[in-house]
Length: 503
Ligand code: GLN
Image (cartoon, rainbow, N blue to C red; front, side, top):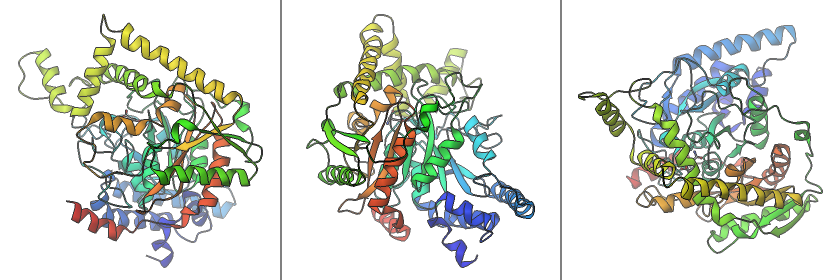
């Protein structure tokens, strides 16, 4: 390996793509460098459920042929040609296992690629493998994976956040140049914050969900986890757009081309997220970032955000209701594993689902079935839908005189493995700052903004009105430059010894 290849994992994906085009490194060399890092470090981190070692190298050779041909004839290769990346394991990949970190889908190999996966392939990126997650994307710490937990690269005794914990940890640890995750109530933003990477939950309908194993269809969105704001923007650009396979998708409206400058942006800091319940260093980070935006000419002021108290209850009723319906398809007939030793068809369903689903997934199915059941539907599901409309209206009112909101992603930085597994409510409260944007269908981005006294990353959330991703990228770019976190990388040797001590 050249000296250059050894430093590859510190480049962002656009930087590596440029180095590949300049022929400073080849795609097989970059891919081997990433696979070597996975070999060395993923035993500790646990980010990967499936590594496509041979297939990735074969794809890298094909990408190199494209790069060589482009260099010869002066054409432009696809934007991420030859760049090694990875995918959350709830994105269907033709010929490669897709398990949602569930026993029920162990060994399942889809017959088609998700639209997002096709678009990543069309960008020339090389897929290294599939990433660990909370089972069926239900969780906030990645501890609900039926396979293994993921450890935070900054401190292996701590969680990476969830449910896209493998995606965030892989990008932070230099085990993929960028990753795709999914976000239903915070599953891209929370792990991005805990692991110190950039994560975007796009506007609902901007990215096709075709081939994403559904959790809660009215909330699910696919998005990037990346080492820089520029990478997140470039990956979002690849993913976004109408897809005939997903009727909820739209082409980005012309307004999406809106301002890319911070000067003049009206930024609100919701008071509801600056209370004593938030770790003081996280609150300080919000105020510091507010000053950075103000220094570039933004008008920043505290504001109120209506209906915040309804976010968590509405989210857990709506998402569980949709999950109970979506997960009905896992019946032992059409997908994944079937239990052995049953006596009737009903017994087969029961045994398959009892053995296949983990405790949290069962909790959501039971909760969702209950809130939809005759006699309770209006009181629970109906009320939650009304609360959701109220929450949307609350955002509309705030965005009438604000361009974006700035606040924490979570009440505190990454917590310890096992700290919250005994109390589902404590775990659900990790989503207190993120589920609002999900219910309203609006975009929200997590950007690294510094570290706390324990050396753990602090992520801040920027939220905007529908299709305002460009405004989020502009503000996130300002915070990224001022925070200067991009030069800092976790010490994976130290992570490994902490993991040993924590076991
Ligand atoms: N933590 C939330 C939940 O468990 C969000 C998960 C997600 O966004 N997929 O439902």
